[in-house]
Length: 366
Image 1 (cartoon, helix red, strand yellow):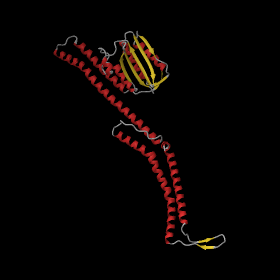
Image 2 (cartoon, rainbow, N blue to C red; image 1 turned 60 degrees about the vertical axis):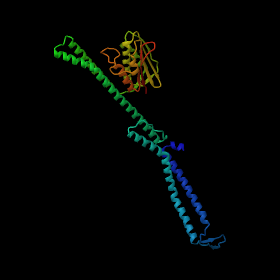
Image 3 (cartoon, helix red, strand yellow; image 1 turned 180 degrees about the vertical axis):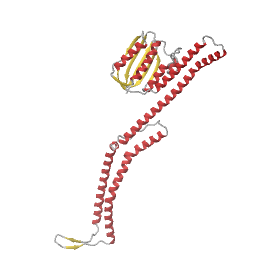
């Protein structure tokens, strides 16, 4: 039965039809022989000629016996028609119950739940035939819809947090500018008022540019390509030399051949992490690249003061500055986190027990 369940639809229907039809023909033959034996018990009438040429008249059946003989002939006739047709009908019923019923119910259930915007279910395995493969493809589609909806929801939440952080951080510059304008209108402005206004206008421009850069990151499409690890090693070394000059570099990149990933996203994230570590490192910078179970792991560590506890606990936030520097709004780590999510990975921050900070990014490798 299990073999029939996993057999192809055409082959299974043909085999079941042949088996049921053969069974029906055997039953028809049995009915024909049985009716013949019963008919032999009744007088048939007519003449009988023996081997000596003597002609003997046989007894004619009476009315009841004649009715029985006609009934037996009718049974043989109808069995020759009805039993094969019934065999084909039984084959169709068995084929439906064995091959079609379960997959159709599974697909119907999945369709109804998706129509009700419910993706929190799984499609059970039906069989290994064409309909079973269709159910498996339906399950893949459900998982993709669930993943896409999760990404859209996450992007919407990130957009809300980004807008809230932008509005919160923009409040102070706007307040200062409004106060400076009031001072100028009242004639109480001094020589520092214009300088202060110019400084805060530049700060607002930097906020707007940071917002625009995040929106551009959200529109980036992941483009997978083959990349040689040797090329990644050279780029990491060159980036560290450019963004963290004067630091002792410890670079560990084993030779594990080619990887399939978005080269541009990897390089952008690496530049953000190396640049961030280079600003806080005292003497050395450590870069470690590993590959395990289709996950590419990049760790950038420094010997600086470490991350603030709230940053390690809550993760990077938009406009969450690690230092009072107007040129940096904490967007490097935040944008790196967004890019990692796009590549099916994540960003983890920690402070090492021996001192210093370590940022680790995980990329899903195809």
